[in-house]
Length: 465
Picture 1: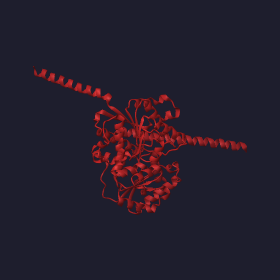
Picture 2 (picture 1 turned 30 degrees about the horizontal axis):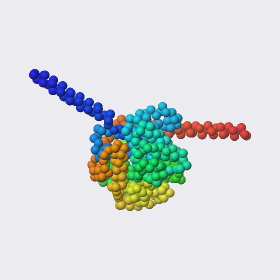
Picture 3 (picture 1 turned 135 degrees about the vertical axis):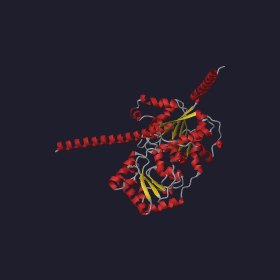
Picture 4 (picture 1 turned 90 degrees about the horizontal axis):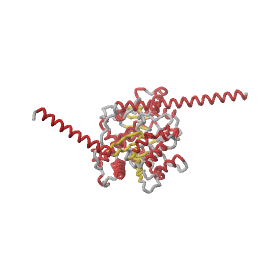
């Protein structure tokens, strides 16, 4: 046989072998389990993006722990707003086409770490309830992991609407990161497993380890995480934005007098950034002491690496700081802040707005830096163990509780966050701008409405004269 014929024969053989491999992959693909992960991934609050990444890493580690090859499952991450806002308003079933397709093609719906139960001034409750109804329709099991629970109200129709669906047989497990007492009131199905666990972001130090830098030799620095102007008032706390602004300015001045460096920063929400801008324009806060455009987890971890302590209204800067072993003070604007600090045994590091005495903040910072951060491994592992058990039971894997990873084994098997792609970063920025534009348009519409009402009132008053 000529050398050409020999080479051709080998080439054909290799081609057939490769074809056979491709056919094997094709045959396996339809059998790969699809886990539909629903989080607040589309939020411009980077804390929600950290939750998404943490959930993905923990799910992948758990599936490996359960003996599942990487190509035997796929985590498909979607926004928890899979039920469109337009549907909530119109109840037009045609607007559910995408949600139906995603849920019907999934083997499990996994709600991860966001406040999916919110019903007081948000519409999450309806989106959550309708998602569960679709899961029931397609016989798809549902897990809730480390969900934020916004209380319970027996007389609130929205709350009761949510409660009804949470007790469907398709809902296998609900864990919360904060209000377990309220979660107990939601439960009626005796087969529904509920528990209190850590937030998935307690593992972010290891998941985002490539973006955490070493602190430089410099004065100690405090990160001041601002929340939007009316956050306190919207949550029933009598602390208007003017008092909030002055409080932040006074705290910064006291820290500076005590020898601390500081910077005002947000976790990305456009409303929070707008408030920081107001501090610059109306309260003469130096622009060089303010950070804008925190749009990706890498941005956030890069800045937090510089801090020796954190003061935060937003919850996830506190959780991220805890993971990074940076002591923090939580300013209470929502019960979930208290819930987290209670869970880590540091409720003494929380303050209500009316408790804040700026002159005493430097001493409090001194104290928490000296005390440091204690991480209880059992607390951290609670969220992972529940994910492990939830996936095992939902898919029927033959694994025992005592086969779960140890803390050290989990850290060794947690996939790292790679990087936000340029395409995804652009998407995040576009979403942020659209929310900003939408808020402006709503305010403008409200202004026009009030203007028209005042005009009509003036007209009637003139006629009465």
